[in-house]
Length: 224
Image 1 (cartoon, rainbow, N blue to C red):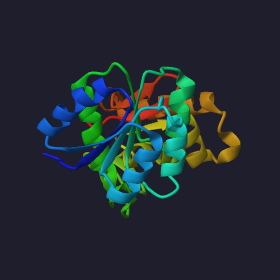
Image 2 (cartoon, rainbow, N blue to C red):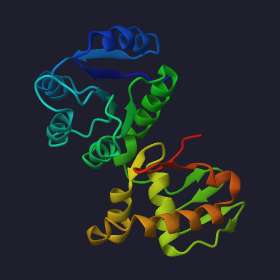
Image 3 (cartoon, one colour):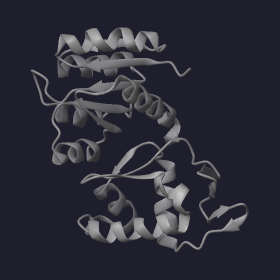
């Protein structure tokens, strides 16, 4: 079981009453903050392994907490918020959040997202020589199944490699487009959809299902 210290940043007492025993039962050590400034102090002094962050805090907006946190820390952050607008999700993810879960949420889903984010903590280490996704072996040079190379273009391969290296994490359209085409192409979402469609066809029906569309936001390569 993955364990670690998880900072829950929320001003709703019922959220802490709900999450504290659930996190403890799952083997985590929960920390608590109800205000943004308090959360930043705890993040700086105690370096939790992951942060669950509400956007509607009494002293500052959660987006500002995230922005200031990213000035000194790469701690994984999962947003927990009742704000369900796509623009809110995109802004949080673009500003450095690792995931976004809407309130009310299912506990099982949240725990799965936590496990995935914690597994990704080593993402800043040198990339692995190869990655395995749905029976497809992916290296920086090519992608193959059962030793046979898939007929991917360079751009399709770069897209697959980017998704694989961020497995389990939502990547926004802007993040993908910037990484693969540069900042001048951040609005070319239709162009990206074409490449995602082509990549799915090359991967085959079963493996293609692992590329999940987050409507209006981006894409996630699932961890299953």
